[in-house]
Length: 371
Image: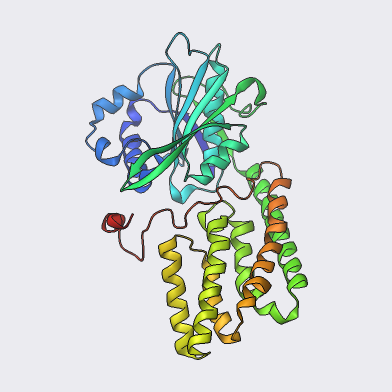
């Protein structure tokens, strides 16, 4: 795959508008603007927007001539703020994610900012529920300088916004490989061979962390609880080490989900015994609780059946549930901090899972009243 990043110009207006509207429709909580506000924009307006100031650009990421990613970068216009640039509206189409495209867009934006004489700071804002984006910005040296509670309201959900800043003098040479372009020339032609090597190293790091965590849990809780460790906590390592940034991997879901579903399994087991009915009732109650409490952690869905079948006592909440979780966290917490550029776990301890109360398979609009 060859990735090309360049400034978008008026002829790119149709592709830009299509991708922009897709972004607003698919991820409404990630942008300050809304699909409803921008769906009526006409091409002449967009063409004028793309052909504007030399100090405000929209950069596009192209794969095989298809526009798959966007970001905006500009310089503040006030006399007292000319030393600042800003990055806005980073977006990559879902089918092209996890290929380093957002990283290359950010590097290209920072390269642009460095070309404007006198720019010393780059700022951006990101909604607090966008943990992957926050991790990317931190890896580039951005730090959080403020938080605006209730910055956006999307379908009744209150969303905080983080303000982040990067001092260019201390940022190193991020994006140094980007070539300075002409207006219509590529500013980057980034091949993915180096990215593939980094991905292989990161995959190995994730796998080694999972091995260490499961081994420690099995050693600490003892053979009598190995079934729980393998069936339930083993699944949790997938989130802790493989999907570290997703809501289901954060403490609210990981710890709350395991404790709640195990408690439900114990209670139902003592009430209805260990038969199929007890397993079914316990599983459905556990699912209902996790959805309502927004602490869904998929591996915890195995806990009710495990506890019912084992006719576990209440002490099982301590050993093996809490003890096993402690083992996983004892490995995951330092492990996520030991690899350069890796996002430190936990990203957001009280982040709900799911982020919105979209139950089952109903479209977002039908679930708005639940949010």
